Amino acid sequence: MVAIVTTVAVLSGLTGFLALLLILAESVVANYGECTIEINKKKKLEVIGGSSLLSLLDEHGIYLASACGGRGSCGYCKCTVLDGGGPVLPTEKPFLSIEEQEADVRLACQIKVKNDIFIKIPEEIFNIQQYKATVQKIIDLTYDIKELHLKLFEPPEINFKAGQYVQLQTPAYEKSRQPVSRAYSISSSPEHNDHIELIIRRVPDGICTTYVFDYLREGDSIEFTGPFGDFYIRETEADMIFVAGGSGKAPIKAMVELLHSQNSRRRMAYLFGARTKKDLYYTELFDEFQKKMQNFTFVPILSNPEEDSEWKGKTGFIPAYLNDYIKDPEKTEAYLCGSPGMIAAVEKKLLELNIPKDKIYYDSFA
Amino acid sequence: MKLTPREKQIQARMQPGAITINGFLGDDERHFHEIISDDRRTLERLGITAQELADKMKYLTDRAFDNYDETMIVEEIYEVSYNTVRGRLICPFMHPGSYRKGEVVVKNLKNNLTVKWTPLSVHMIEVHGFFEGKGSKNRIEPEILYRVLFGN
Image 1 (cartoon, each protein chain N blue to C red):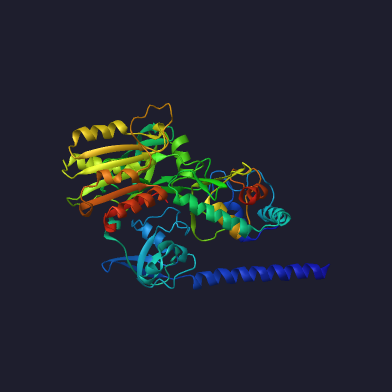
Image 2: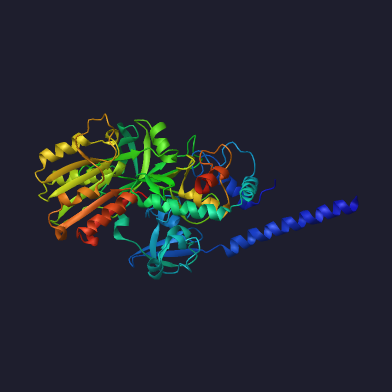
């Protein structure tokens, strides 16, 4: 009996000692003290080391894109690390091309700041902020697409380019144990900077869209970060071909609204692809733009119209119609938003029609 | 069954509301190792490996991606379509990378059996031998999958 008690006491003591040793080791080894994050060779942040680069930037109001909350699964939070980031980790490699690795691009969420670190990020990122807004209106556009109107209150205004997106934050709720954020293009014009509009299509079993469709109500508060993205109008005189499918209409709507309010003289055609008539929305709005804008043509195309829908418009697939709307390929820019399949097919056709590859801009769903 | 810390993390990521609203286990109360073992035995009985199934699934998934969201016939046996859904999913087994959310639908025209999968399903079958728990919305029954991919 004495031997058993002694053994238990010794083992307990040993376990306690090892636990204490681990705590001490953690405080000594993992205490990286004060570190500096130097950004673009001009801005310095003094931080306490030990956390991820992404979270430390976040704490200082510098928001890199991230859809997974720093779990290393979305690959959005890329930045260039000039020095101090250590070797590329296996968790980063699936998201980095060979070219990116050679150019010192890293995932900020995977880099633990242990010493001074020198990074480079696009200047536009300094414009990205966290916003709080009130849900002013929720409008059903189709059976599975809603439009949200968000009135900003903190800060009260946002500066963005037509075509950019924000990351809407869904709080933890009945069906999700943790907050998640998802990217949605802004569908309103940047000229109205006290609010934004988003077009959201229901994703079956999607955590964020289920929240928006089944839980979010007018009058609720919601948060988002932004603006993000390099899908925006290039300020040239070139003709423009817009192509979208599904909820890909959002950034194109923002672009056309802006061009309309600027009285743009650029020649524009907008080809929108949907399967059936019930998948169409904003048709009247774009018909109105067509009446008001001398150089704007709107072309809805259905790939699978119901026999009884009395559809009199174009049928089939967008690539078949592109040639009808391109006058001078060398002086044409294309703006595409939709599924990867649609974008690949349209891009292939545009290249065949001699649109320069560097004038094809797109925002892919995947 | 005693779980290692890593297994606890995986089990947590398979619960509803972690990665997807409905999770990966359905109403199956077995440990995911047991689900994988039971399905492996089914594959052994059928004389096929998870890798062979995954190879065929990847081939048909690529055809579906190429085909601009419309139905196509592959090799005169398979009717293949892809439903685009915006976004990507991560692997509950904490494998790096992310997978398109869309759904591939394949019908074997010879026996009229149909299965649906996501690119994440293909990864989980290939790398982890995991077909999801019974009652899970995205569970793929190995035998039905086999009959769709290789059946007459």
